[in-house]
Image (tube, rainbow, N blue to C red; front, side, top):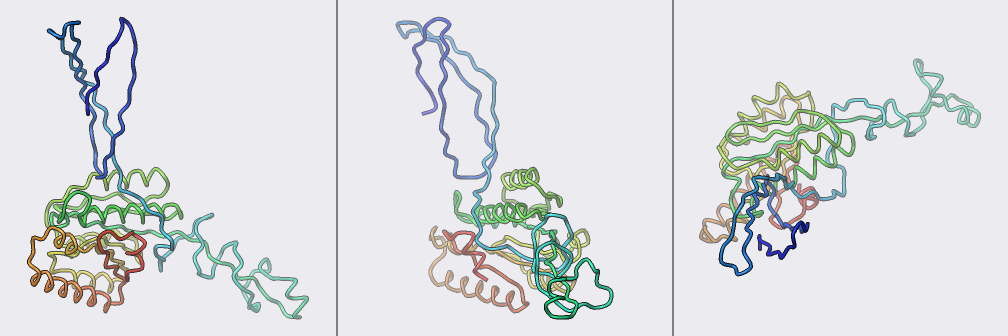
Length: 314
């Protein structure tokens, strides 16, 4: 119940607390507070409204990923960043190789020289960060289902999980949300940036029907070359997908798609007869196969599965 009955003495102070269970992300407000003081016989009362309103946000659920999300072909050097399996300047030992003109004497392994009788140098693992772009489909069509069982809610959960891991690894992460228009959180890193991304994800409401081709065409000139792009979308009601992905790949970008299946929610709601639903599933399977034929990773994410399952769904 949202009310409490108190019996109080003059000047007495009483405190109490509520426990709220809010399974759906979003921004909420608590208040105003209405107070009534009744007489001893419960015949009359005086009422006062306290206009104090407390605002709070519910962020998408974040899961723990078991594997590294993605690697970039265009990493950036940053001291103390995550090591990638690329030979280069760093501190973690990778292998030994023979000395060639131009190698620094500081990299010579003198113990190996004494043992093998020829100059050997240490190779190290390069330490890099990536610029990663997360794109979330916030169109009206992404709201199929109800409550937290919609492609949009799954996409927000997936994007929050990926953002957390990528930022923990000290990468630069940007968030783009498209629906009626494109809203963005620019590239940055750190815990404060994660808060910005989670706040933006909590603010998404399904609207509009902007196509992914237009989104990528306008976005790519401002994305660092070679940056990985991770798209969270059910891929419904968009005939521009093939052309959009082809153009993006041809310009040197990689796209990983995590695609929550809206058909699972349609089946639960029983709004589509069995035969048309079967045809729709076949069409989706064909689309997923076509995207994979481009050499792209795509996770066919089923309802009630974890983000880790989607990661291995490609």
